[in-house]
Amino acid sequence: MPASEGFFADPARLYAATRQIEQISEVARSLSAGFQDSLMRDVDWPGGDRFGRREIRPQERQERRTALQTSADVAQVVRLVADGTLGNLSTILNAQAGAMDDIARQQSRNGSRR
Image 1 (cartoon, rainbow, N blue to C red):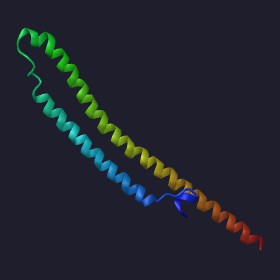
Image 2 (cartoon, rainbow, N blue to C red):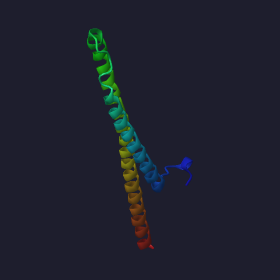
Image 3 (cartoon, rainbow, N blue to C red):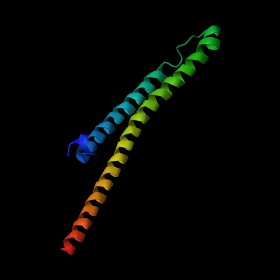
Image 4 (cartoon, helix red, strand yellow):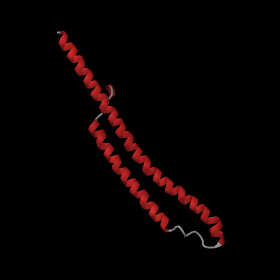
């Protein structure tokens, strides 16, 4: 049945797409970890004088925390998309199995009436 005429789902393609999203999630996690490692290497750069310690470092630390949290959040969001897609796939498979069981029961009832 064409998708325009009703609900259509291809579980195999959904599963394959979910696996690709999981791979992207791993890349994002790896990039986030690498970003965090490189960012932590220059933690002492902002100013050694009094102005740097009072003015620059507090702002730089806040920006660093925000950047680290954002990179971790992006990696987590990609993972959550994969988890949600797997959840949808499970729902689809259960709905398909239920529909097939209902069809078989109905055919069995109709066959026994003849």
